[in-house]
Image (cartoon, rainbow, N blue to C red; front, side):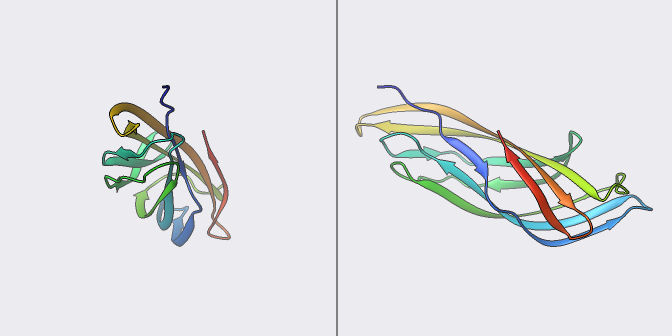
Amino acid sequence: MKVKTPKVRLGNIDVQDFNAVPAAPSFDTSFITQIRVKNTNWGPNEFDAATATFLYQGVAVGQIVIPKSKPGMRPTEKKSLLSSSNLGNELSSGMLTLSSKAKLTDKVELMLIMKKKKSATMDCTMKFDLSSKAIQGLKCK
């Protein structure tokens, strides 16, 4: 039996607050999003606690903890998360691009006897529109 790697992605992003000071330059934001873990196997799975990091040009600007969970057979597990960050950078373009990365270690149980380990990675990019204080685009690999 072949064990498939689970899929990890960011869900919708709801911007709670976004303040930018181009003259300083700096920004402060808080938003709610979901980490979606899709189990593509025909057995229950369990993933260990992990950390998702939000980056601006490779520099960490925020971090959230993804708690340990056991979604079950073939569901998509959704975790609502709140993240906030502070970082000074050029904001005069009106768009701010952040990326997020996470790696989850998953244990899949086959036929309720065997357990196999897989690692799933998330690599997403999101663009904040500074004038509307909303997400302009979200792409995950």
